[in-house]
Image (cartoon, rainbow, N blue to C red; front, side, top):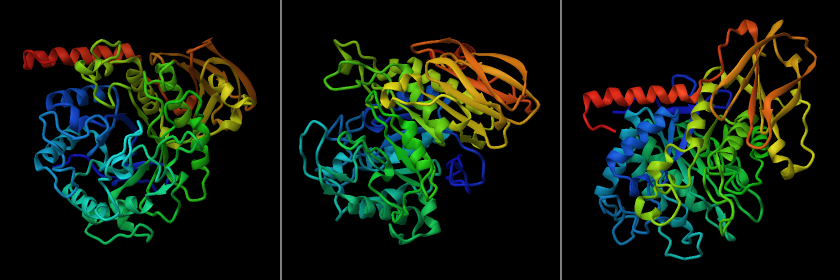
Length: 488
């Protein structure tokens, strides 16, 4: 029995919240291949770690052939017999059941993709072609089946797509995805929902679409090819992807400002230690992870997704033999993952749900597009004027319009997203004029968040030092050792 409440879109259509109206902050980890490549005790360890690091969602695929064309569990049970979507192996899906239920026990939601896009388009990114597994003829039946199977799991959010645009290499697959959505809708609700007919019951099968970053066009939003007729889409997922140049704050703004308001987030930004090009010449470090997260959130996203190049595909020791690559287990402790905990603690220290984008409060302007990425600043402010946050990608000096803030006195903090530590507060008069602030240091990889509070709001220190968080985790490990000798 699920312990988590279902999620829904908030009344202002900017956020997700529980069905009882409790705020929910989306911080997801990318674990696409977990059902196929991580055994149960390791899956439990991963969930323990991610909860400690502040994550609230796992992004998982039910059927993903990218790393194993047979799509087998760690015990070798294939998902399908004869690669036939109607010949499903109950043993495989029992393991997926266990993962979803274990996530619930950990307080984690699951963004579940029923089928990776490769199974629809019949082609992988290496150019190899296959017989198409999910088609317009069988998508509804499979959607109905998997929707019915998980209709009582209240920790599931549905996601179609899987690294493919709905129009791929000139072929339109929209009707396949629409039939899959209708099938899930029927399986979850028992009602004959239609992709283009508004119905309040669609919200019972909360759903989005995971696209790819389309190199030729630069498109990477759910709504790049779908439109408002597709009422099954509840919120927008971006894939700013693994190149060095995407300015995800621009795409977030475009979606934030659209006529039909929908929540938006970056569901696949640059992964930590992912190649930025192919063949690899440069690998992303934790700085780009932080950049994409703060840019997106302060531009209006309702949450964010983190990924690591070794974790999304569950790299084993065998996979890494003779390379300098981390296993998925080692990668769980990479700096970017822990710095997501710092971000989460910052967000939780203020009523972040009430923040709105506010670039007009800062003087800094980008005039050189992609060439200015490392000097970009992104600002948000509480809609009631109680606080403002400004992310400065490389630190430096910023001029801020204080008229956006309430109160006669302000508290000035400098929050370090690299380690969760803060400096301050400095107390100053709110002059309601433009004032310049300079970060403690500046330069390459020296990003900072300027936090300005109405002193009367009573907010405490923003965030928590990561060393303090990690120390608590070690204490927890020692306590577990007392109860379960040999626990790790």
